[in-house]
Length: 81
Image (tube, rainbow, N blue to C red; front, side, top):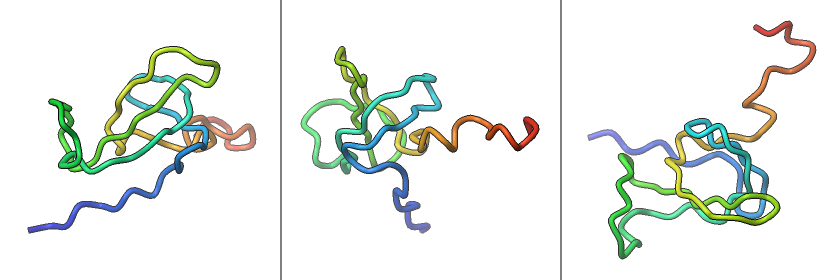
């Protein structure tokens, strides 16, 4: 059986990009799904909690879709490749 890939993305308090929703927010936590007391409906063993930078409704994300914002968009010198 393969071990799950460890989470290496943004850490709590850091800006994060959720590639599944296209939203930018602040990562609040990455938890093991076994720690949760509700139906999380995430496909993997971890779940990420994010909040909008200026307030609003928090959301849950699959940590495999959570990236550092500078990894989400092409760099100006990359020529779009």
